[in-house]
Image 1 (cartoon, one colour):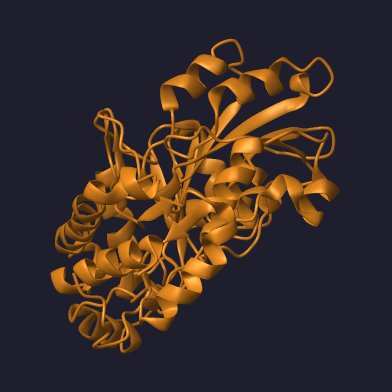
Image 2 (image 1 turned 180 degrees about the vertical axis):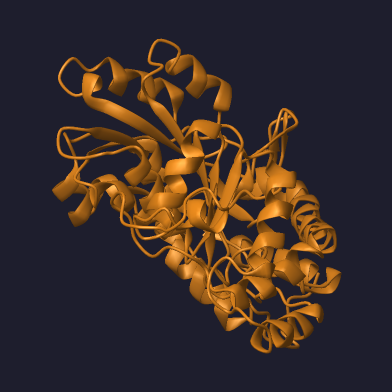
Length: 390
């Protein structure tokens, strides 16, 4: 194997397809560029068909979609939300903004999703358990968390809503069901780092029809504008709380073009994932690497590829050595339970040792649909050489 650099490998390359230019031009020369135009409608229909959701609302970000879910739950002071510690800040922030307090749960070491046993412990806590209104699921890297275990933990708590932070998981599946269809609400991200993107964007998936009517009121700045547009009322007015969540139709045009090429994009990303896994599998035991675990009943969304290094102390050295050879890499989340903000908004301190260990050992490799087979082989060879001391 050789790891001599011939070019700098890029860590992430935003998805781009040629039809974007035509669709954006059509949007810019059309009658509506603001939210809920023609392109937005087509994106919503496509996402509904893919996920089976009762309704899809396009938002300016996944963060905005999470905030909207917190508003729909009417969360406020006195309420508690269980959130995994190993996730992005806004998974928790969206609910703290509503005034809810947070209980951080640990992750289980296989899928790096929330640990059902810890969720059950938090629900059983006599002080804070009764105030829990929601549990947030994160499907890390687009691999479904232990959904069956979470459902078992919630079996006696029908009052607790499940919110899927599905920023990584569009087109992934659990037991044949689309990720994003497994809770009352789910959120999507179309940030430039995601499989499909429009620069910045997101979506809220509503899986219970009873939530649809009010969701449009909150989405439309607290008004019944959607009912007016559908001819259900003769004028629209202020009805409820809300905000301006809508995604510009011009950005929806970019998104539609990419969604129409989803099978091609996902196929390329799957090829990268499988080449990494095949290349590293023969070295993993010798080097002490832990590769991504994909349960038999799951189909990944192929959002990223990570490894767990044998020693947390070497990660900085490994990242620097890879960079020197033209291979960028990165770590991921700093556990929220140990953060200043986490301690500020927590309902009570919790112990999340697996989150801390995984955070210290995790290394993300370059991952995007433009990586060639030779690029993947070079990344694998370089990582193996660095860990072998060559």
